[in-house]
Length: 129
Image (tube, rainbow, N blue to C red; front, side, top):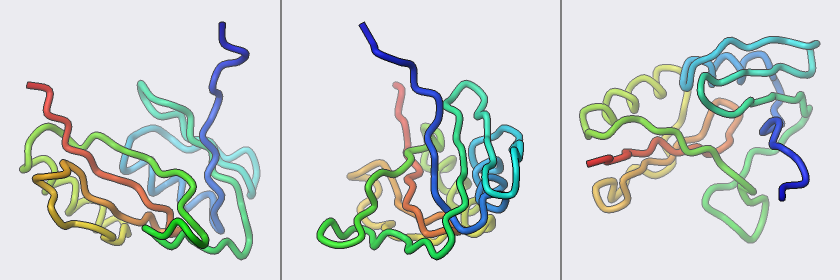
């Protein structure tokens, strides 16, 4: 029996409003600011993401594990075809994402990016056939 239910995944960032807006455009939902330091994004059919102000945040050094590691990242389903992946790639770049690893995508079925605050996230190709 579980002790509790997962309420939110909380992401530290210098600008909670901007990062919540970025992820709302990536995964859907509408950000709701509780104050200047805390913004909640209720993702349709997904977890609640919260964005918490962290002044002076040092972004993770992907893919390092020895110093300032990423600690966690979000995987988002970008579709089941490479055409959908390519379209998602163009959209996240236009929103301000930075590519971190685009190599061997057909072997890995994912591509790694940094969001505007520097947190890694993956666009994943989910083949459900």
